Length: 124
Image (cartoon, rainbow, N blue to C red; front, top):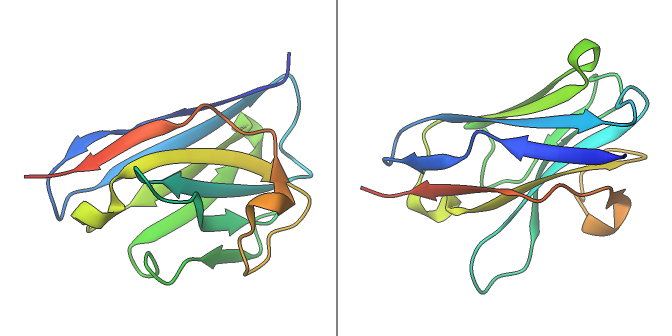
């Protein structure tokens, strides 16, 4: 069964950190780009970051540059999103998805095989 599961979300104070994980089962992530997206209540799902299949290329939304870091461990079939200096506006459900390529536009349409999401809430 092909499945992607995100984990690591939670409640954190502004300025805090979280590390999200994206674990795949039933298929290998080796040859796929991985993207992280988020959706806040009442808003469209937006691209946060992506990483190419071998990890040599990464892109970030302007709103998270310098604060978030995407990485992958193909041996563990898992990708990560390290989120530092979190702000209340980062509050959203975060989703992981796989795709053919990682490009700067971070378009949802370039990705498929979505996970169920993990809630991140930044609040004091």
